[in-house]
Each structure stands twice: as C-alpha cells, then as structure tokens.
Image (cartoon, rainbow, N blue to C red; front, side, top):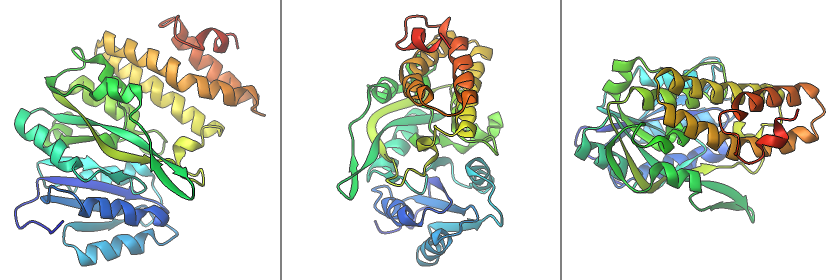
Length: 314
C-alpha cells in the first residue's frame, strides 16, 4: 500500500537472524497493510546470510522502514528490547521476520485499541506449514480461539482467564506507554522469552481487548530450524520449561488464580504430550528427568488433564 503522509500510529518491531529465505515475504506483508500509518524497526541480529542486505534494501527504498544492526548476535529478546527503546509512536507491535502479517492485521488491531482505550489487544493466528514445496496456512486451533473468540472489549485476565494461552508477542499490539509504565522488557539470553512477558502483560493490564481475526501466519520452517521445532534439544527444553514455569509464577504471584489454573491445564493438555513422545526415545536421561520433574510439579494442580498420569510416573 502507498505510504501515508500522516504520522504513523504503530511501530512494528521486526527482529531477524539468518532469515533471508523468509524476510522478503514478511516485509511484503507489511507493505500490503490496509492501514498505511505504520513504521517498522528492522533489527538485524548479526546475521551471517543476506538478512542484513534485505533489511537495508527495504530501509533505502521505503522511509517507513528503519534498520538497526547488532554487531554481535544477542538473541531475540535483546533485539526486541533494542527496538522498544526507539519506538516513538503511540502503539507497538511485533512481527518475526519469518512470519507473515495478514493484510488487515494492523487495521484490525489498531482499530480495536483506538475504540477501546485498552492497554493492548490480542488476535488469532494460524500455522504456516510446509507442503508440496511451499507453505500452506492451517486452521485456527482451539486454544487460539478460546483466547480470542468472540471479540471482547476492555476485559481482564480474571474475567477471561483463557487469554493466558495466547503467549506470543507477535499476536498483539500494545500502547507503548503501557510498556514504559510497567517496565516490561523481554528476558535476554533464553529461548521462549515472550511467554513470561505475555503473562506480565495480562497481570498488569488495566484492560485488554481480543479479536477473533487471524492477524499472523506463524511459519513452521521446512528445514526445522525455528526454535519451536527444536524441542528435542535439552537446552531448548530447559528454556521452554522455565518459560512456562515463569509464566505460571507471574499469574500466581499476582493472584490471578483462574488464569494460572487455565494455563496449567493447557500446558498439560497441549504442550506436555508431544514432549512425552520425544522423551520416550530420547538418548539423554537428563531430558526425561527434566520433563518428569516439570510434569510432577503441575500434575497436582490439574489431575484430570490428558497424559498427566503416564508422564507423572517418571
């Protein structure tokens, strides 16, 4: 879409490390937005491929893009924090450079906040799976619908505890004043850094909105290199479990009991079963011990969730 002469309303933070294969599609999805009043901060996290060149080309050809480079790789959390310090618009959102915004995403999300005055809004998303040499968008999954459908205006995590299942940064647009008022930052040096941040957002928000519209296509890479596809690696598992523990702890500490319970049930029903399958054949006993300890911690809080009994036997 043609750039608008009006002041931008929202900054989209786009971090990237070695995502040259996908970055052009992500940037094109920004250019296609039906809301033209946006700007984007592209953070190249010391890529070794053509990511930096693609980001630089975008910034040179379109004033809405701004390029920032890390001289050494610092990770996704640090890249997002770098950009957060540079935001000058009332609103901020996120897009990973291997994912795709739907054409109306910013119009829908920014429009919701403009009408409500809430601290942030969350939208639905679907997986973009490799198929027949390309990628195909799937259906909205039940836990995503539970968090975002139907549309809600000015809700809270106590009124809508199922929202705690929406833990990804890129499904949300927020007021930058909310980030600065609460001191929100992404953890650095760990994977799954957005899980704790999401629960802190829910715990500290005066109100948030939900929209059932699909706003992001979340890519499952054909080469299996994204962090969510490497859960068979022990260090990745450890970060994953700590992120889930930390998110629950945030809700517990803020006394959002229903949301904490909803999060525990969803983790046991959704996250644990595939990890159990990996653990059965994993060559490292430390993997099974780490997962078994985690499941036993949660099992007493939701004893009827699927797979809990078998996993808790370890």
